[in-house]
Amino acid sequence: GGTAGDGAPQNVAPQKYDEVSKANPSGGSNVPLTPAAALKLYMNSMTLYEQGEILDYPQVFYVGANAQKQRPTADTADNHGFDDERGDYLWVMHDHVSFRYEILGVLGKGSFGVVTKCYDWKTNQLVALKIIRNKKRFHHQALVEVKLLEHLRDHDTDGNAAIV
Image (cartoon, rainbow, N blue to C red; front, side, top):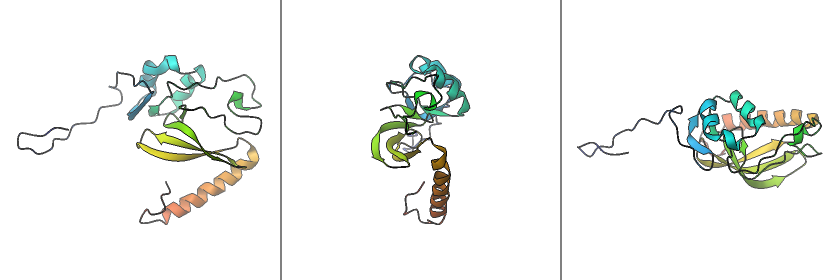
């Protein structure tokens, strides 16, 4: 923001993600953090599982600092306690998905899984995320659906279909 002496707008360089030093109470930022910076700011509100998982992500936008997080278990039968007996993800309000999306609620449930309403901290938009049941027979069908959606998106030259 700001203007030069002649009234023309000045461009302000975006803040580098390794320079962010103050934690956002929600655990979110539209400026990407490195995993190391996110750990430094939010480690106390992250599970041990998340503290290891975060290292697989080059950029972190949201950690769900205020979420009542699911604590992992040793039981691998239900994905360490993150899924129910059907293989549906046990979503938690205000938790993160992929250190980018904030879960705001459920839009619908079906035989393939659940569709959650989320806030995308990277793009500052509301989105719907479909989370497929964690059972092998649903994975193949989900991949077919992804290919179909990619085909529709690639042929939507004017962007009217709103497929990301």
